[in-house]
Amino acid sequence: MAQGWRCRLKHIALALGIVVIASAFTPVQAAERTTVFAAASLKNALDAVNDEWQRQTGKEATVSYAASSTLARQIEQGAPADIFISADIAWMDYLADRQLIDNNSRTNLLGNRLVLVSAKSDAGPLVIEPGLDLAGLLSDGRLAMGAVDSVPAGRYGKAALEKLGIWPKVADKVAGAESVRAALLLVSRGEAPYGIVYQTDAAADPGVKVVGTFPEDSHPPIAYPIAVIADSNNASAAAYLDFVRSPKAAALFEANGFTILVEQACAGCP
Image (tube, rainbow, N blue to C red; front, side, top):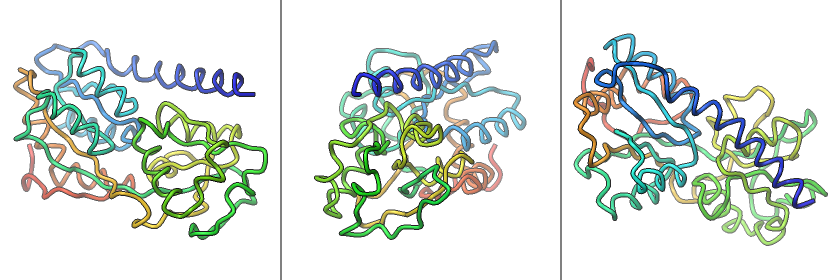
């Protein structure tokens, strides 16, 4: 059974990876391209922001989407990137501790909510609170969530389940995926009856529905920090950062369900 789940997760990771690779190597003049490493949960919103950036400037931002942990370690190993957007503060701190980001450029950009989703038509609604019998709801099925030792959504999810006293009964039922989008796909495909993902991920997949929202005080605040990579010499990186913090970008992020944490950089960037 465990081997079967590992195979499913590997196939999902491969499918998501193909999308990332295809998007990251669009031919374009290097001087016109900003390379962004971004948390997988940002894909729909950041794609829209980047389309607007290209429309307004003629420049392109190419993005590698993956778990924040994966991206941070790739940057640590020397992968070429200009901007990093993490789904939690811890992985940005990881790079800051190694002097791999420009700390003066660092800002907490976005917020999100943690939700329980299901693809079952008769599931929910549920009040997520102490005493919720999530193990009973799962029955013989799995709880899809990001890997709890590395993926931000998984960390938030475990913290919430611990705070609510639910974790001990579901810990051995968790299917830990390499990113929150991979966890979402397990639910959408019907391979897991329930999953813990961000509100924005749930909104991006019509194959799932939100059956409950975790109390905000059940887990650390969800924040997406952004920063320029320390050794980036791309002259467009600072302008891209300003655009991502602009009112135009804020509207696109909000349309995809994110909340804005940073003061908007300017009235009409760029």
